[in-house]
Length: 436
Image (cartoon, rainbow, N blue to C red; front, side):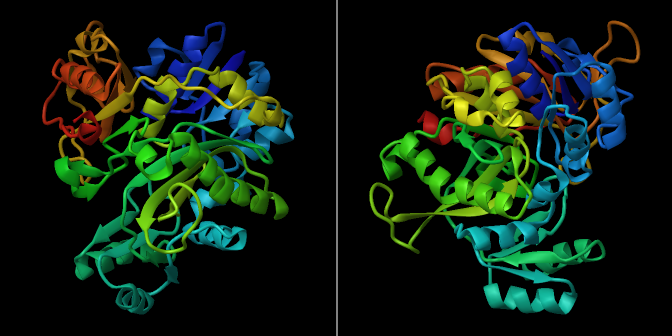
């Protein structure tokens, strides 16, 4: 197939690498980055957020499938324009993408669908934020209602910091003040054609900037998959997946369909496993699963590890969702071999990343056994033969697989040791818990 992937980050690179492994495809990326250029034809002048431009390009270039990576093109209605022209696209329309674009909309859908989640109050003024913070108490959780590139959430014991975070977003619209939920977090992806859903493999990401979950929230500093500790709570990973499918994914997809906004694409469920609350029967009966958030696209950096383990053809899975035939597809299969990813970030990330610095040692890193790289923010050298340079906060993901988590970690950190980026930093505790 001729496949166009919209986006320029490590998530999109991971998608393209999974498609490339299948062989036989012509791959295009808009706008892409310097690392993606080695695996796909770049279309840098195509505005991925312009519905008309993307549709015309896909039509003129006989693109068989468009895969939308980031959230902005979804909220801009790119998928709607493509579907109107009969071009298969993996990604929800603007109305369904509000599941990510508006936290308040997502809460309403969950309430209507009977999906368990934490309490939340929509606040449009400082006085309303004050009252909600008092009502929920510490730790305080404040979220921007709209898109914030993974930086719209604060969880803090500091009331002043929570209030300041809310005020920084109030000019753009309301914020949500939420109940704090405690417990391990899990990311679980679902492919949907608007009716049928197929679950991928669970992953866990690391949101804080520094080791030990210290520092500010980020877009994600690493992830691992599978989650062996799920068996301790639910008997097996499969039992967990089946429960979340039945209690979360299917009710939400049915609710969106009933409201005339079918969800066709990737439903990302950010989950938390809490003790107490409603008691259910069977394995995991003492654990309540609640939704922290939904996204309307593949998550980053979890995509890097989930797709590294995927054995089923990704193109077939996404095309069947785009064409409404997902019920004919079997459940996707995954390698049992663990995968981890560690994000290399620029100095100052996430507050004020320093960009434009050269990145050295990428070839040596990529030659490490069991390792591949997914570029997030890299650009070509100013002169032929020069080094790539960093162009953003999260520069690249080092993805490693191995027969054990210990081996995967050893490989990932060995590869990172080959890379030089002045001021660059990364967490050194990714998947350490499961490697012991």
